[in-house]
Amino acid sequence: MERLFEELGAEHRLIAAVLGSMERYLDAVERGEGHDRLDLFRFIVFLSDYADDIHHEKEERVLMKGMAKHGFSLLSGPLAHVKEQHERERGLFAALHRIAVDGGDLAEAVPAARELVAFERAHMAKENELLYPAARRELGQDDPAPLLAALDRFNAARDRDGHAAWLVRLAEDLTGRYPVVQT
Ligand SMILES: [Fe+2]
Ligand SMILES: [Fe+2]
Image 1 (cartoon, rainbow, N blue to C red):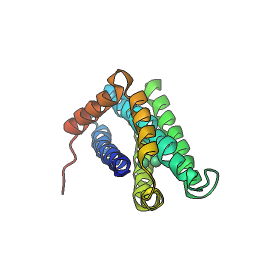
Image 2 (image 1 turned 45 degrees about the vertical axis):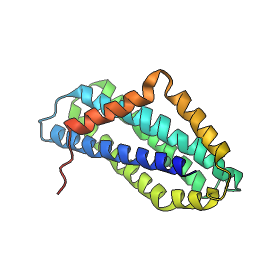
Image 3 (image 1 turned 90 degrees about the horizontal axis):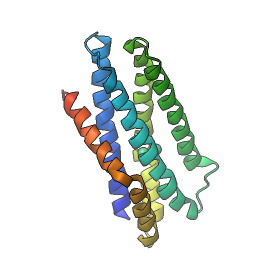
Image 4 (image 1 turned 135 degrees about the vertical axis):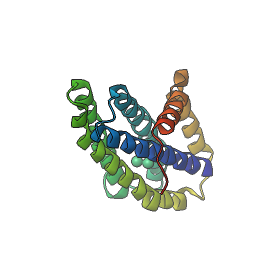
């Protein structure tokens, strides 16, 4: 079972690193130094395909499904709240996508992108502090085999044609080119 939590935790760390780099990119755009529109699309593709389509979906289809079998409601309480937040994030991704594609001044994308960074950070912090510890407590005593089998099926489906691995390389490229300076 620990493998599931290690995987989700590693995904949070990768997403957080990309959000930090996205902030550096947005700072550069605001200073008038960042003109690379393709990089905005790179950040959006990572967030849509990895944070949303892999990570959030894994939480919903593997972790939360497992919790629902323990009697957690998917329609109210903490799981419903997490699902609502995923839905809201999907809306923020789509809004940013539209702004980027419409092709106006790059600076017009900054407020929507900053809102997305702040929302996703707060969302992951809440999961780290509340959702994951609760899930660990509830699922910790279970036979891990069915959940890990569901996890393997999910990962295999998402990594078809190596897309998941490509997204990790994309994240490494972005975090390498927009490094977050530790103070
Ligand atoms: Fe989430
Ligand atoms: Fe998460």
